[in-house]
Amino acid sequence: MGLPVGEMLSRMGAREFAEWQAFCRREPLPAERAEVSAAVLCATMANAWCKSKSGRPFEAKDFLIDWWAEPRKPPTPEELASKIGAAMSALGGRKPPGG
Image (spheres, rainbow, N blue to C red):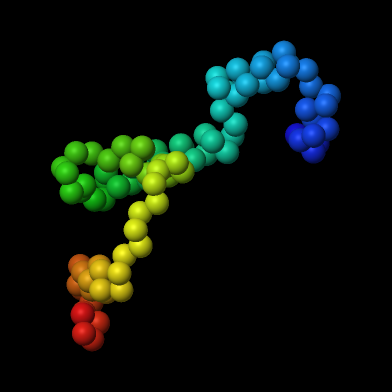
């Protein structure tokens, strides 16, 4: 909006703020729509070129980040090496030494 938050809040009454909240719920900001649009595109491409492990078609929600989810435990070096080796094999490459 071009204003610091404190200045904006000092100029805006509670009623106007509530109206903006209602508007934003009904009309998401362009950045929020861009994230959803990108997810739809990813799902479309994945369905055209890949098969999901479950056999069901991919959906846009499969490609959206859940910012409030509990963080996952980072993989161990052994798990990473195994995943990299599997990816390389799937792409026709050789397994890394010791992998």
